[in-house]
Length: 236
Image (tube, rainbow, N blue to C red; front, side, top):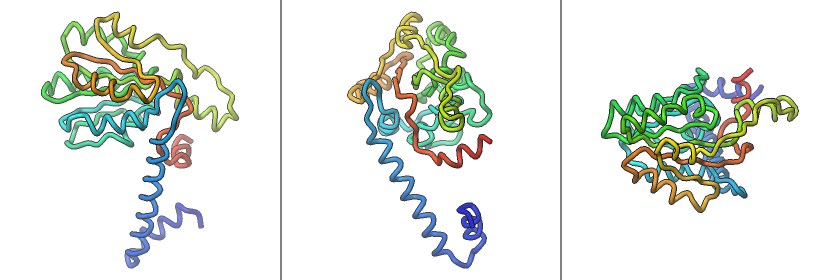
């Protein structure tokens, strides 16, 4: 009997609540260990994205709207960003809609000017709608933008690493400097390439009265906490 069959057996056995509670506790403890391991990672010339989003969740106001596009970057939001109200976490998830999150955040902010709107974007995701930086500046929309820059289409890159014996083909990117790009539109930003800059970046992001961009430079091989085996099974 495999683990999936075992879980179905426990679920159907409504007479053994203790067994089910024990299984839930086991999964919960596994998840806590995965979170702790992710927060303790250290990189040279890169920031730990798990640590950034962990502290962002603590410091951002509860009246916030989070948008996320398609890519590994959204898993950091799933793992660490709490949702306090219905319809305040907008993501394309398995629809595969890259380029969704940035314009969705603009619309969400216009509709809810009293809430903090934060767009969580991958680098490839952001480049598909980068022209809307001009929209923000022209319309004076105070949106907060976080770009998780791994210089890759990381969903495909990681699948090539794991499933294609490391044969990497057309999934690594050569990106512009995203802060310099934002500056060219008249929008301020900060580049975060080590953990020491996390506090400064979050404070500048949340305290800005105008649009602000944070570029997180991360290692393309970093994995957020997830059930990797089941994730690969979903992609088959």
